[in-house]
Image (cartoon, rainbow, N blue to C red; front, side, top):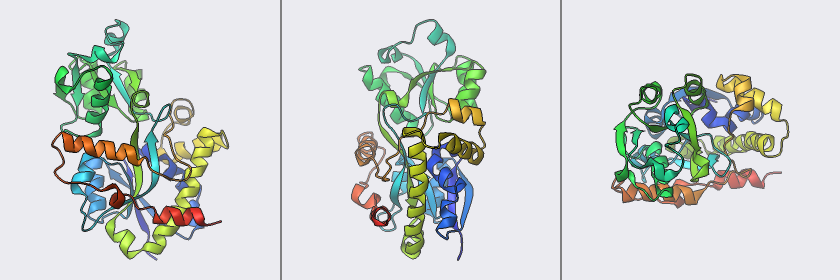
Amino acid sequence: MKPIILGLPDGKLHAAPTLVALGRGCFKRHGLEIEAINAGAHTRSIPAIANNEVDVSPQGPLLGFCQIWDPARPMVMVADQGSVKPGRGEGAIVARTALIESGQLRDYSDLKGRRVGLSAIRGDHDWLTLSAALRKGGLTLDDVEIVICDFGEQRHRALADGEIDVATVGRLGSQRRGRDDRAFVIWRREHEFRERQERAITFSHRFWTERPDEGYRFVRAYLEGLRDYYNAFERGLERDEIVRVLAGQAGEPLEAVATEMVPTAVDPNGRLNDRAIASDIAWFREQGLLDHAVPIDRLIDYRYLDAALAMP
C-alpha cells in the first residue's frame, strides 16, 4: 500500500489536531502509512492538493482555494481542523508598540486613517480579518491607508520602522519574536470580533475517488486525535501530554506551547462551521474577487465523518 501524502502548512500549529493524531500514532493503529511533508504557504499548498500532488491537507476556504476549486473534479472538506470562535484561535491584529503605549489605538474606530499592512493578494485571510475589525468600528477599507506588506519578517520590519501601524500575525512563533523585539504588540485577538473556519481536513479529488477505503480509515483515525486535542484544552484531560506532543511535532518550545498558545476551537464530532465558510465565500463574491459559486453542499462531504461517528 502506498503512503498517504499529507501536506502540512508552514506554521505547523495551524494543523494542531492533525499533529496530535500523528504524534499519538492514531494513523498507524488504523493501518495507514502517512508521509507528512511541508506543503508550504497556502500559495503552494492549495495548487498542490488541487493538482493531486498531495492526498490530504488541512486547508481553509481562502480566496485561492475557492478560485481553484473545480466542480468537475472537486476537492472536498471532510472534517473540522480548527476554527476561530470566542476565546479560541491565536490569529491576531498587532500594532506598533508606540501606538498602543501612547493610547492612540484603543477601540476599533481608532483604526480610521491608520496605515494597514495587507497581503498583495486581495482576499487573503488578513483582508477578511481587517475588514471584520473595521466593521466593528463602523469603518470600511476605504477609511484606512492600505500598504502592501507580505507576511513574516517584512511585516515585523515595517511595524518596527513605523512604515505601517497595524497588520495581522497568525503564527505563535512570529508573535513571540515580534513581542521580544518590541516590533509590535498584540492589539486584538481575531476571536474577539469574528468567527472563521480556519482549516478543514481536505481530500484531493484523486484521493477520495480512487482510495475511498483509506479515506474512511483516515477520518476515523483523525477523529481520535481531534478528540484528544479537544479533551486536553476544553476538559483538561492529559493536557501536559498533548502539549508535549504538539511541541515536538511542531518544533516549537514546550514552554511557549504550554503558556502562550491560544488553542483553536474544534468540534469534537468534526463538524465544520458552514455558516462561517459561506460568509467568507459571500465576501469574495461581493468584492468581485470570485466569479463563480462554490456550493457548500459540494465543498463539504460528511460521508467519511458520518461513517466514523457510527462506528463503536
